[in-house]
Amino acid sequence: MTDKKKTTIVLFSGDYDKAMAAYIIANGAAAYDHEVTIFHTFWGLNALRKDEPITVKKNFMEKMFAKIMPRGADKMVLSRMNFAGMGPKMIKDIMKKHNAMPLPQLIEMAQEQEVKLVACTMTMDLLGLKQEELLDNIEYAGVAAYLADAEEGNVNLFI
Amino acid sequence: MTDKKKTTIVLFSGDYDKAMAAYIIANGAAAYDHEVTIFHTFWGLNALRKDEPITVKKNFMEKMFAKIMPRGADKMVLSRMNFAGMGPKMIKDIMKKHNAMPLPQLIEMAQEQEVKLVACTMTMDLLGLKQEELLDNIEYAGVAAYLADAEEGNVNLFI
Amino acid sequence: MTDKKKTTIVLFSGDYDKAMAAYIIANGAAAYDHEVTIFHTFWGLNALRKDEPITVKKNFMEKMFAKIMPRGADKMVLSRMNFAGMGPKMIKDIMKKHNAMPLPQLIEMAQEQEVKLVACTMTMDLLGLKQEELLDNIEYAGVAAYLADAEEGNVNLFI
Image (cartoon, rainbow over all chains, first blue to last red; front, side):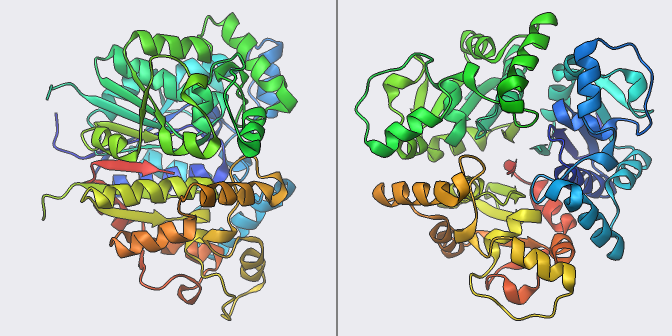
């Protein structure tokens, strides 16, 4: 075991702004030399979806979920002031003006900094998401693996 | 004091899916031999309501809250994709197909595993909820008791 | 470094009830002799806005945000059962009846107890909020300062 500090984040939310907060904290902690894990569960899994459509075998319900849920980080919506889709565009415009990184780039940066991105297999199963639909170079695990990380954690957050 | 690891969760949310996440983590941590506490406050108290109507003396506001709020875990709604009540049914159907436990059983399992379920007395008071309306074998406490648990905690989450 | 326990809360949410929960925990922890920090980011910054209009130079987008977002703690709305503004009034009436403190007073109390209130400069920038618009005697910092507090924290919450 190393002496590194640990930050472990459960990303449950599918909101663009909450996912941004999660990845900003994660990238900050990685820059600070923490071992960082983001455990994506429920709607948070959408941040890990590839943005192109992937052909995989799905049953009716799974197809429906796949259609309704945002395909990837860039398509996620705000937790408030969404204004029928206007909100995320506004935020993204403002971010561009301020040279702030949009969510897909925050995720890329996290991968470059070796933040461990984990997809919760139990909720993947419930929502009918397959590994082929999610980003490359992520890990797959359940609640036991999350707890093993979290119980040694200095900073544990549920977002 | 024991050497057991501690997991302490504040369940603030009244959403079915968030409560599921809280109880899945709690049950996992208990199986992992943690001492686990779920402190139910605000809308999270609804997870502890008995599902039958209980006759207790209430003033007008308290009656109104009692009517509007979901009576028990099974009646709670999703944080998103609720579709006028369709969402929870969909999730429950899918969970049945995958042999995943619905929320009321997750709560039962937590009680069997001796997860400490606490109802926040301050918010019970605000929402007009009486002890007779809540599940048996739970504890009643305030923020001081929560902090006493949390400050020794390895995993602290606000859900 | 002192031996004091530390509680560090990220207040991301702009909901009245969630901000109440954050400040109740913070005040409890301060009474318990913890060093307490609330790091206000995104919509949580609204809790720190002064309630009178402040004249500062803003561009079009910033003016729009300033208009749409609640000006100060007292104007924030509930996470559920908002009923077009009825909800917060109901909660406030009930709180008065129970001698519970409304949010603006919880914030005052936190300041008296030397809870460190921090505004996230990155999101202030995004939302166009200026220091003149926020409460006096607060601090300004970014994610690095948050992590420096949190990594030593006993209780870390994201609300």
